[in-house]
Length: 151
Image (cartoon, rainbow, N blue to C red):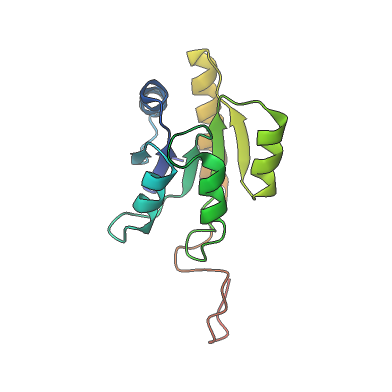
């Protein structure tokens, strides 16, 4: 992810959020890392026009107020937000959570490793993928514009 595009981390566990920040620092990832503690805060961040749209969202599933599945459902039905890739980054390896996340069109599902070195390796792999992955340009949507312009 070594670019200037921000990453939005939606994670309610303070230790896990700190571990992601530390992994970014240890990997010299320069992307600004925004943090929300639940789906409602994440939506508020995304809908605030003064905040940059992230290149990717790292999303925990088990959170208070609005969990990750509810967040995905709302984002993937919003014409402005639905093209932002979401990677579920959670402790849940429950097959139903995995299936439900992919049914809702997430870009990936990763179970957080407990060991810090494996955690850093996982964040590095995610960072490498999003460094080489082509992104949809910011001004593009999948909605018809009426001018013949589109993706």
